[in-house]
Amino acid sequence: MALEVLRGGARKAVFALAPALLLALVDVLAVPAAQMPWSGGRIVRHLVVAAVIAAGMWILLSAVDARTARDRRAAGDPASWRSCLGMAGISAVLWLLMWAAVGPLDAMNDTYWSIRNPLGVAPQQPLVYSMVISGVVHGLRLVTGSMLPGIIALVLLQVILYGLGLAWTLRVLSRMGIPRAVLVVLAVVLGLLPITANFTFALVKDAAFTGFTLLLVPVLLSIQQTDGRCLRRRGFVCVMVLSMLGFALTRNNALVILALIGVLLVVLARRARRAAFLWVAGIVVVALLPQQILTLAAGPQKSVESLGVPLQMVGSTLVHEPQCIAPEDARTLDRIMPLQTWRDVFRPQSVDPVKYDPAFSENALQGSGGEFLSVAARTLVRCPGPMLAGYRDQTSQLWRWDAAGVGDTSQSFFLEPISNAPGDRDEILADLASHGVVKRPLLGEAVGTRMESVYRTGLDLTPGAGTWVWALALVVAAAWYGRRGEVLVVAFPALLLWATLMAAAPIAQPFRYVAYLPWILAIAAVALIWGRARAVSRPDAPRAAARGRRTSPG
Image (cartoon, rainbow, N blue to C red; front, side, top):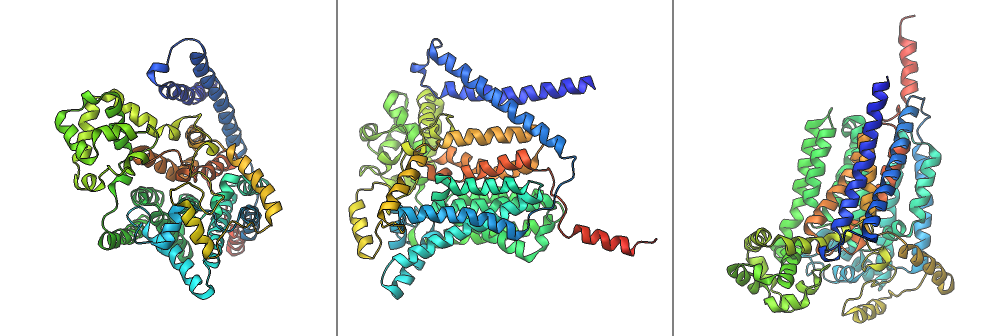
């Protein structure tokens, strides 16, 4: 007995210390070598970070141990669908209240061009998403003479998507033994947080993508909890297909992630693996069709969108150690962009100044095939220092625990018809106004302005992407410690998405790329601390047991 306690304590100490030391190491690597003296305040900072994380992890692991002990007690009945819809309705009211305070359209220039010219932006924007929003807006404009009814319809459809996704998630969490009071608090928090509320009505592709990512949570949890038996129900299969197709068709790089999620789905569906494999294969094939249509109608997708990280790594080397690049590789790079111009426009944390410069040749990059990647690989071997520094600077917003807050980055929240600052912003706003779309709070100017000020303050205080990633990583580590597979299932899509951004992010600053993180973190934390490892009995189980007693001998 004493030996078991000792082993348990040692395991707990390892799980508490390992993330703390890893985070402190990352904190060290986040600082350029020239600014990293191992004396004075910096080493104290690293030690303080490690100590705080270790203490926090110990508290979290203790909560997991306490939950494991409580699992032996009887669970209450799960919440009904009506109750879960009511809880999600509370969130929806709070989301719509924020929307009514900031105006009917909250978007960016990409949204405008997706509506105006869906095929023209198809090499950069998801084709299906652009066609849908363009069709709805222009279809209702033909009837009403204004773009506003279509925009309102899209906002309401998106809020319904989030509401149903949240209601279903609450239902599945309830079946895992989570108390109703905790579910109500979760719904209220997700309704009140400005960063979660904003993306339920913001008309940007990343908001729709986040909604479908939320829908994947109850899909995967249901399959995990029932070993795939839920695949025998037509209603479940229909929603699963809708969720996975929506996930794949609202982000250009999501198809690879969908395939990996499909592998997880097949593994979880132990009682229906053949059916799971067939459904996943069919969904992937259907999701491939828009890409083929796009290639025929508008040409192949621009490779620059997926090569942001190696472009920045090469740019860092051109700035800091240009002599390190082989002459033949330098000639290849010069065909893509004159090297001196590349050095002049290079910015460490965004590839946009490079790819939008007139001297940058997308055709040369597109036509190089794998030649550019070969150049980048050879340069990494020859010049690892500046290449890794370029990678660090380009992706740091995604992994630093003290990443810049949402309020300090662009394209991270949307409270204006055109929330970013493109060069043609005034022309776009004028065109929207000519079609009846202006910033006019539904609650009135006075009330709307005051409420928007409160929401902006909340958004300015919201942590950046790296902070959310580390919080989710700590929850995942605690789930691994507690052998809580359902929490790992919840976090799996989010971690995959984060990994793709680490490999191919054109720019890491905008929070819209990781807007799913607050949702997934909140759900995973609730499942970890209050959930049970397996679902509680179905509501009709007592009736089935009673029938069994009546028909049994004696």
